[in-house]
Image 1 (tube, one colour):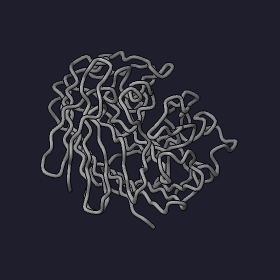
Image 2 (cartoon, helix red, strand yellow):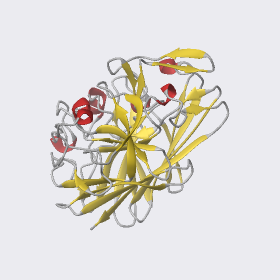
Image 3 (cartoon, helix red, strand yellow):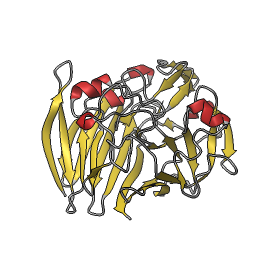
Image 4 (tube, helix red, strand yellow):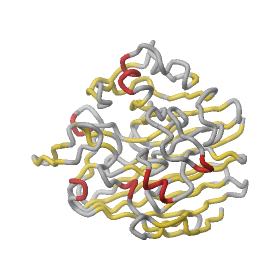
Length: 344
């Protein structure tokens, strides 16, 4: 596996942003930016299957977390507050009344330090105590590796000098017919989950663990993404489509197991997602709006890409029956997600 570094651009404040091309023996290539630790491109069988941008001006103009690592806390925290060790912490509310994806300047907008260790790209960011309202100085490392089986491994690790909360994910948008295809028509999804966390009208979990059975949320077998997305079902109306946390089966906190799959008949490309996390947010790009032109001047309109965001549960701090999001002082958080591509 080969890794090559080149200058991608500069931020508005003059900071250099670098791109790293990870290329395997089959010619599959993943391009990672130091801005947001973002997956900018993922080319398989001559098809670029992730949405992204060609320049830094577009990355700084967009607000869709395109391909980036979201943190410190991916997804939503209700009311922008959480209690920890008898203290209440106040975060910004950048999604109506909720805190979303780490706040106003989350990990998706940071410049990450980068090193190459043999066939691994290591990206590091240190978040100071109090940044976006979170307690503790948090040291985070994201490790990207592309193997010769066309599997992109994303390994997360973090440690903090105080008790804090943490939820990291990658927010790539996939279109298996190519980033410029413009529609999810003909693409199917399977999610290995019997339950999901029910949302309220603000896309915030209510605490209810709901069965997918006999609902449009049932992806235990392959279903076209768009087949049931506009059905008269309250959860879909709340999210303007799919934007929910599915509870992945067989979670034990350790095992990296199959969580989700997707397939596009037109391209023949199949995606498998493996993770050791308890949940996956399946999001169908309901709020993509085409305002910022994508790569090759592509229009990323509503539902032109989907996300599989492997994660802890949204608003986990509010519910004792959700897996804990607390990272104890000095303890290491470690997690792995794999995006595997193949032709069928």
